[in-house]
Image (cartoon, rainbow, N blue to C red; front, side, top):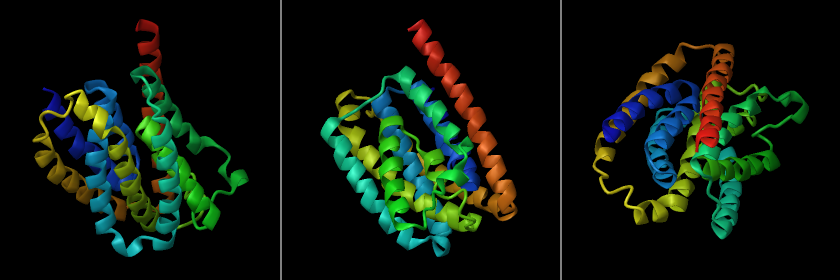
Length: 245
């Protein structure tokens, strides 16, 4: 029953990501971490989210801020190079705990930090932090969002640019975990991807229609609360694994 659940999750979470840009990825990572070994969960999550984010970037390509994307890529490559040198991997319990704590970043007094993806140093820093956290914890959308939430940018530019940057981050994550995942035989049946890819694209397309009908205020408020609820569930799950394992 593992692969049917993953395929359905790809559709549902891509729909959520198509609206909010990150909550779906957080949901999907939790499902995969529950069903698969950590290395395999990272690769499968990266593959599905690359399709979801890539298709979302294509749908909203006119709104992508290419300057931010280029600067982000510089930081992303630096973070990946550093992590490849040390090969850090979290056990399952701590993976859930870190996943659950990531949404807490959205509740920080961001105006005091004045993070702005439009600034050169901040765009590079977002590449370093988001890719680094994405490789270690699997998901880093809430951290990416702190570089956009106080900018006042149009929600379509936010979603499009974040989607493009996440394609980069997920690509590095797949490269980081693919060897141990294959060595463990956890990806022996890759046929599921053929079904997951079109469903991820469908979910993203449907989510885009909902996004068009939302205001910028509705978009930001809903995103914060949705990922916070999901994060709380993950922290509880991680603590239970620690206490029972």
